[in-house]
Length: 246
View: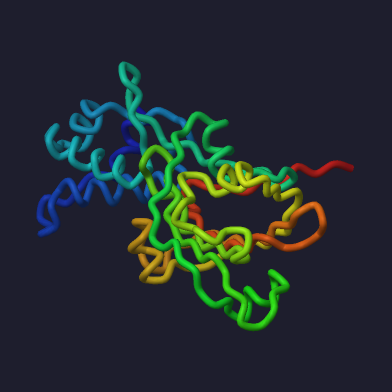
């Protein structure tokens, strides 16, 4: 009974001009973000939502479909609907997003936005230790897990390492390994930002939503910088984790 009473805050307003499924979907999304359920917890069934909130199965299903498309919930055949677990990336080990997703049972993929050769900008000249008028391979892509956008990623590499960026497939690091280029260490800076209109459009979050911004410079074993990456992660299901010892 207590669990059912908790669901009453999700009840849509029948007098509102907003469709019931959108009201319910927005309230359910807000409850998930507020921690009503923990990551990987099961959601109540459609039947329970209908019985407690007095909504139809169509309304409940359309709202849940909306949250599924946003990546907030996942469906397990024969088991039910669950809160999408947050991805946790340890900061003490050099790994890439594709590897981390595979290790956690997700299906990684990328959607390329740009693969081009351009003149290096001031930040690229400085961080990659390039000469003036140097060129870089500039890559922009969406990073997805199970077809849900997790992050927007911009990467720059010196031209002589990647003269044909259009040949890069799903994994940049796999492409580099095949070219005998090994990133052995990296320096990362992490901060919090609010989603710009462009980031919101690309990731499906609201403009102004909290996001994690990661800046990464990767180095070869001879100490030369080879990679400058800016990544903007959805903070609703992505965390960075540090384990400390004393």
